[in-house]
Length: 83
Image 1 (cartoon, rainbow, N blue to C red):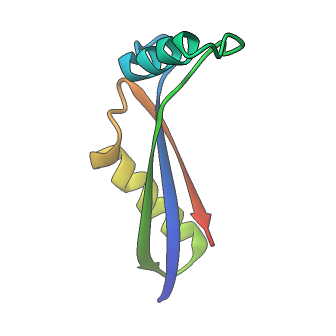
Image 2: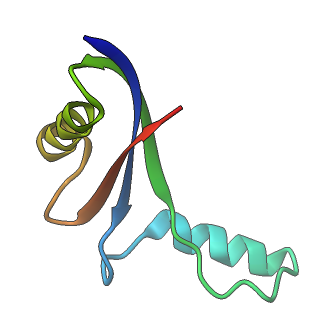
């Protein structure tokens, strides 16, 4: 087995209200950052694990996201191996 680091990024699907992002966007405009058009907040999980291959590590990350890290009804996720 080899050691890998994976990153699982989770973000709301289009059309889902993101109150944290809306609050940040509002605060930025109040701070005179008037050019800001949109803000989205993502969650990033950095996970160290052991797997047979890079593909197996990504598969484990997808399984983790489906079962725990993301609410697949409201959120999308991406899994990538990082260095």
